[in-house]
Length: 172
Image: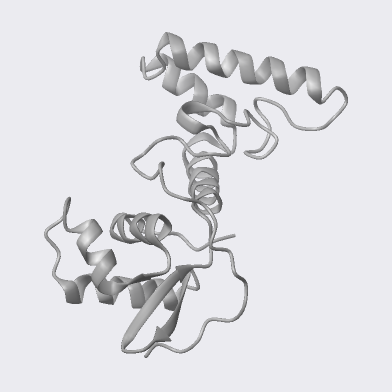
């Protein structure tokens, strides 16, 4: 399970997922459109992410390039699982009920969830999982890209991938 990321780390990881391999300068350029962070702040966040094992770095000439070791989908799944466990007692169905009660689900979202549940039910007769099961066995797809794809909280849209494996090298 990927380590928990704070809001600043999510912003940096989004840039890394979109542009990997990326130098600290490239990441800074991507995040500076939304945040007024200095280059050194972005570099510090990248090095913190490296220590957490979420990115790795590789020297290319004078540049240090960062590549994700955790895909965006894995990070979203882990964050959503943590939220569901903490706030909803581990029940995905309770999360969906809360979204529906708060009018966060529009007609298109509801129709998409119903379609996915019906599709899941018809393709997995006898298989484990379900709407109120765990994240992977729950509403696969869910809201705005799905439970497996993440509830859109500003972290969707990145390019998944970058799972290279391998050990992380020391902070340089």
